Length: 294
Image 1: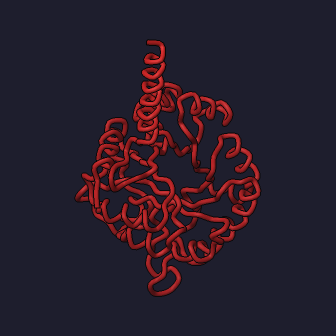
Image 2: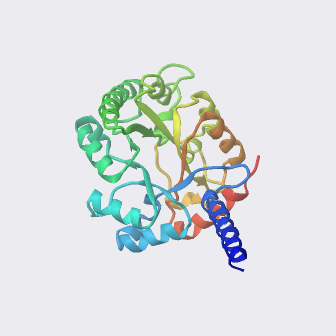
Image 3: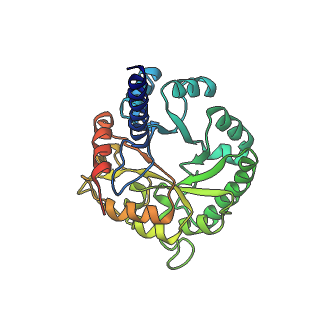
């Protein structure tokens, strides 16, 4: 009887480990085609964060995701914010910092990024005057190369998040945009890019084509859909946040884009939903990603 009991307990323990492994290996928001990893840009819940940081992080945890991207710490120190993330099993992968700091304080960015536990530190808007032309793009590329070298010494990877104004056609001659200049004049060893899909489609560009045009450079991606019927072809970098809709209900061809992203080498995906209904749209977006196929 004792021997039989030991065998039973051993079998039960093994089964538990198998089931545990299955649970931890599966990931919310991924499926047969889209393998992720998928996380959340916390700016999506900025209104909630300004009221209560811990309860908002509980909402994030409740979605079942693990990776997050930061855009500030909502009045908390980097150390305290990281503790709150860790307490909920949330892993900070990347964060956004102002362009001015990349110009004047890359060491400070590196220090803060390390305190937050980030792998990537990036910029989501380049300060500029008028149309973002070739001269301004080259100046920005120089800033990112310099900052990227500083960050690399601390084990942090620098990146730039596109915002639409970089795709103005003819910025550096026929068939060339300021985005091309940023890509070509930054050192791939020091600088990565984050594609915000909405800010590629809103200017009238093909997101899949840009992913394949510069393979290996787009290491991060914002998953964001644009409401059907919203006009495109604008390079102002701005549209109503409520034009952000649940993935799969807007204008984007997600099977095409996600297949290109996989081929291009995107490493981390983050849902960003700036709409007033983001708290409800995010779970529906996760469901869409689980079922999308190509």
